[in-house]
Amino acid sequence: MSSRFFLVALAATAGGGLSSAHAQDYPLDRAAVSRAVIAETNAWRAAKGLPPVSSHPQLEAAATAYARYLAPTEGVGHTADGRSPAIRVRATGYNYCFVAENMWGGWRRPNPMTEAEASRKAMDAWKKSPGHNANLLGKGKNVGVGIAAWRQGDRVVFRMVQVFGTADCAPKPKPFVTKVTQKVAPKKAPAAQPRPKPSHQ
Image (cartoon, rainbow, N blue to C red):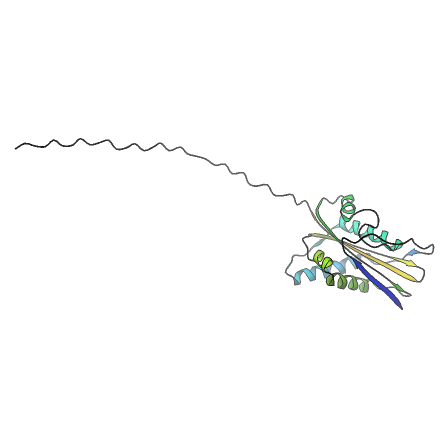
């Protein structure tokens, strides 16, 4: 059995090849993978004293679409489809003010990885990478996970994408405070008292 695994930071360049004429989509329980990765992400965040992230359907749609693009082309990086993570997220209608993306990939022959194994390997790799770990522990409040697998001859190629986002974080308006100035009349000086006249004996 042979295998190869890799992960790419957000600033990585695009790459990849063309799909084989004999390539075909490999069935996966994508929902189970998403739940496992999000649960492990939140466990990792809790261990660092951070709040959990919540699954978001629009981020999941962006992550899944990109994973399904990467697997058949054996693409890597964050711009393999000619778009940035922010552009892909915006296309789903998610009104973001923060976006971050993790990507993991690998292949194995002749028997593919299980969903649980792929989830574990992706999370282990992201935790050990400073850039990916920063995304795991970052300021994103929502998350979406996508995975795809494609059989290329005797190999099964995996791609997993994790997208973090925070939406609608416009700065809060400062409270309007009205200052009321009360005019105070100046105090009048006390009237001078007449001096008593000296008495003559």
